[in-house]
Image (cartoon, rainbow, N blue to C red):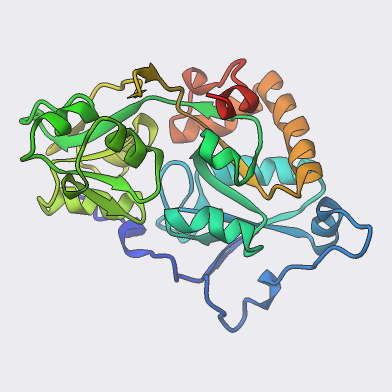
Length: 304
């Protein structure tokens, strides 16, 4: 019997306290008053205010392995674990996390509902205009989860543009949606999801022919949900947009005005890249040495 894994049952309104990490609902919930933010005093930086209050609020999207709630109710994943380690180096003891629909991540950040997006968000020029990205902490290829044997011979987003009978699930307001649109996939051939878990359920129900995400996300979920007997992940590929290959790489996102917080984060991240802690933290979630962003920079990715 396939492991149904409670990840598929935990949505954006779940409220959990787990050790030093909190998964807080987006609505006011009794007992979660600690999630309110201490506003910086006049002349005080956001970083100093976060140190004073003792925690930083992060938004995740419940997309394994980037950031999710595990079977024990713990907030974990490559991004939350990396954030936790970096935050401690910055003098912030706790990470409090909210599960947020993908298209609500940037608006929620800009509205001060949280301090950082820790969801493996790809760096794109459009997003760079709205948020202050840290330096990339991983690079990745794109792929699809499909039924075993890949009966529809799905390889890239162009496959869907060439076959009107196929449907693909992608996250709403995601780069995968942009890749699909750039490949000429009509809106009626796309199912837009709030999170990865829900999109995989669409595949299991036969409502779509494939789920389009990163190789890390799909391979991790294939293994964790024991789906390998019935489904597989296609070979990774580099998307092409307007005739040019893109570089899928992700980072933490901060508000435009919190450059001091972002810059201090980058200093610690640079140390982690050099001393191996970046790979050490990511390896349990499938982020091996091939995921290391190398000399890729946010400036480069923002100007593509």
